[in-house]
Length: 290
Ligand code: ATP
Ligand code: MG
Image (cartoon, rainbow, N blue to C red; front, side, top):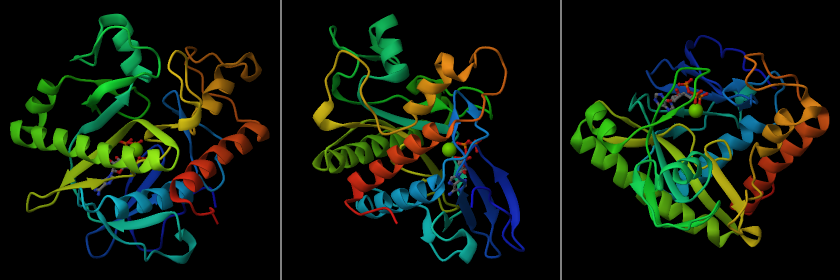
C-alpha cells in the first residue's frame, strides 16, 4: 500500500510530507507513515515501497532502546490491519515548534555554515575541520519548523529560549544531546556513524516532555557506514542521497531552482533507495526486514 486511505471513523487531523495524523476515539493519535519520500523540500510523486513500514519499525526499535534516556509518545502498535507495521497509536502532544538537531560530525548545513563563518550554527568550532570531521563534542543546533515546501531555518539557542522559555529550552537541549549520545554509541557498535539527527519533542497536559514523531531513521538522520568514514569529502550514506544525486544529475532533466515539481523517479533509483532504507534497518537492528 503506498497511499494511506483514511481509517474508518477516525478524524483526519493533519497531512505532513510523509505522515498522516488521525485522532482516535480516546483522544490519542494514530500516526501513519506513508511510502512518500521528500527531497529538496518537495514531496516526490513516486513512492518508495515499504518505506513507511521501515521508518515506523526503526523508530519503534529506537524508542524501546532509548526508553531509559527519555520517555516517548508511543502507546501501542495495535492498529487497523490494513495499516499494520506502518502506524502507531501515540499520545497527542503539544509539540514544540523546534527541530531539535544534534550534530556530532560536520555535514550538511553545519558544514556550509562552518566553511562560511568558522562556527557551526553559531556554536564555536576549532579550525581545520573537514567535510565529515567529528566535532570535539556533539552540539545542539536547533531549527524552526518551516511550513510545507519551505526549508527549515537554523536558529540560535536564544531564539529557542524566546520561543519556548528558558527552562524548556534547556531541557530540550539536554535531552537532545543525551539521546544523541546514547544513539550514537548504539549505532557505532553496529558499524554506523550517526553524524547528526533531528528530534521533535512535545508536552503532555501535565507538562512532561516526551520524545515524539519518528526517531533516528534515514529521513531524520545522517547515517554513514563506519568502515568507509573518511573526512575530506562527502560520505557514503544510508539515506536519500541517491535520490538527490539523481534529481540533480542531467539524467533527471530537472532544475531544482526552476520552481517546477521534480519528475517521477525511474525504477532503478526507486530500487536502490529502497535498498538503502532496508540496509539501514537491518544493520542497526541486526534483524532482516520482513
Ligand atoms: P509538517 O507536518 O509540519 O509538514 P513533516 O512534513 O515533517 O512536517 P510528517 O513527518 O509527515 O510532517 O508528519 C508528522 C507530523 O506529526 C509532524 O507535524 C509532527 O510534528 C507531528 N507529530 C509527531 N508526533 C506527534 C505527537 N505525539 N503529537 C502531536 N503531533 C505529533
Ligand atoms: Mg517529519
